[in-house]
Length: 291
Image 1 (cartoon, rainbow, N blue to C red):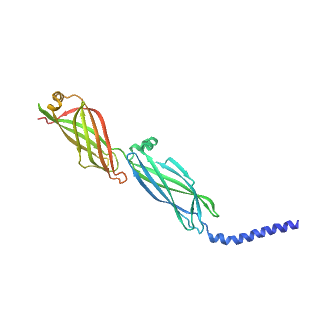
Image 2 (image 1 turned 60 degrees about the vertical axis):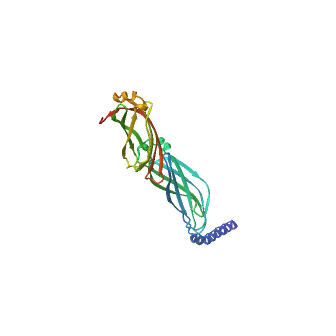
């Protein structure tokens, strides 16, 4: 019994001595948690179809020993609702008093966003939040997870609208007629844009009345509208005499407007973009200032 007590006492004494020897070393190491923060958020791409975001998370190791990043998880929230999530288990060694970085690129399409959040179709901007947790293996502290998050807004992109506003008959004679086609150009966005070029074809009741390529810069303020008046001259000798009777006694006309519009936005990532035009409908001919 005495031998066992002596042996136990020896073990305890040895352990105590070891702890006493290690304690100054542990205190000298003063192991701390790594410092983690979001260092940069960039809108790297923006188009009529979607957007690209790039998050950078900086890591600083304040310790005199190396630590290991065991991986990270993330959630992207749109208007406070989880939209997507992911995880990466790649290990990265961070040297003593060293630093590293985690990059999280995210691509979204407006179709995905609108399908998930209908209200975004009319929103001027979209709020997004990145929540991430970085997992580390740190000497003495063991396995730890450090959360970070950041919230920002990105401009929403809504398609400009071009539509036929009116068709006016200004003058008619036995040989021809002069008309004015009014096109309304609307910018529904919270950012300004310039209409740089407009290529158009205007067909009425199956006959081509007008085609052209307007190269004139037209400024569209945010939520703004502009009306373009395009002159039309019809030659009855070329198009046909039946058109004279149609214009003298106009009925509802069927039209088709096709072409392409080139815009330049005030948002740098979006820049220049082109919008196809393809619409059809019915329109009443307005008689105005006939001579």
